[in-house]
Image (spheres, rainbow, N blue to C red):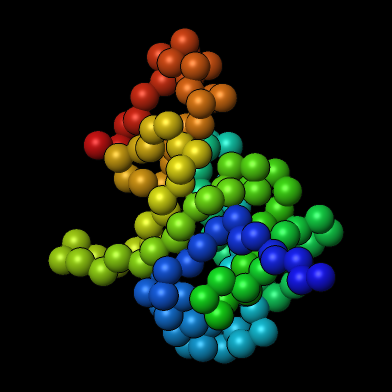
Length: 131
């Protein structure tokens, strides 16, 4: 019986290509991409990405478009279904995260709120300060 692994994060071909180029430029051929979420940012939660060479205990590890991806269990809760793209335009290039779990995002796109933390933030009068 074949068991299909479900990817929690998908890299677009453009993002995977850019990450591959960065890994080669930095001579990190045995590394992958750690995607994580941490508290903070102007919307309550913020995204993070870093290159790593090995998984931590409990990580979900999978391949997306030829790039090895690591996600810790806590971040996985917030990142399931996320798509990461790379956008290059006149204002500069950067990675863009499309998160179906976010009920709102910061103007800069680096932080977000989920339904669970949106009510608490609104009660405290929190708002995005990077418009």
